[in-house]
Amino acid sequence: MAVGDTITAARYNIIRARIAAVLGLGAGDEGYGQAVQSSTVSAGTNITATHMLALYNDMVKCRIHQTGSTPTEIVVPVVGDTVEDSNATSKKGYAQYETLSNTCQAARLNVDAGELGLQSGTSSSRSSSWSDDINHIFTVTFGGYSVTNGDGSTTVISGENHMRVFFNAGGSINISGTIGSGNTTINNDWRNLMSAVGTVVFDRDNTSNGSEGTSTGFVNLPGSYTTIFNKNASAYSANDYLIEAYKSGATLYFRVTFNEDKGPNPNFDEAVTATTTSTAQLNRPNNTNSVNIPAPTFVTTDNL
Image: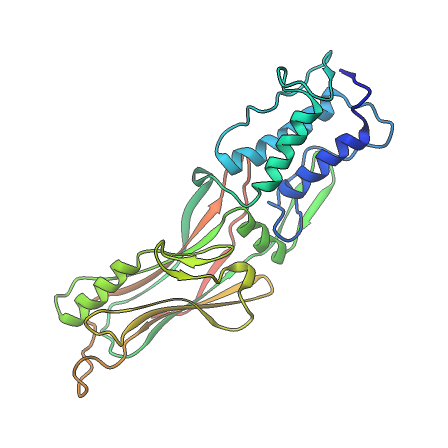
């Protein structure tokens, strides 16, 4: 591939660094923790079709993750092409690659829903009756992993970085509860409450069931239990469903509480007799052609 005078190693490296920060380990709100095929080139190096192909593949992975589709804004040059400063027709110019790299960076926290896969985490179920608070406590631990880049180097992703890139890439912890059959006022009230709660999603920035929640997510979760979601029942309005969480190192700690406080009759707190279940699931970036982040480990430490 012939190289135009304006396409220098320095200009190539600018785009490559921007994409590597998004697709690779990155830092802060940048980084998906993936292998990077392109590599930095030395000053004076002629930029070849091989260099451009590696850069193209990295950019395609970013955009598939962000949009669910292969980008059409750029085309990979082939041997014999001249890489111009800009060519909107061929879509092989430096300007076209630079523009898309900026788009990748700006959209780094976007994820197409089809790039995520829901999978089991942990659950706890109680069939015996209860008339006091019950808890489901579980941990989510990110064990770290490593990737091999296009130049043969290895990037080690620590446990804490594993957690960070998981949430950067749109991963979430999804929590829900169910109340089984049993036609009593208290059973029905708890069942209605859990139906209204639905699935609570803990993601990078927030915790929400889609209509209510808190602005507490991974990025601002403290080191001691804090409320991330809470909703009260109707007939027994003192009862509530509470989710608390904190993080320490590479582990997230969750405490789900079914708060059975005093009912309408101050002398008798009616027992819940229906089977009660608490479930935690994982919504994970899992496309092997774009962004695929290993699953963390779920462990229930206290059953309902």
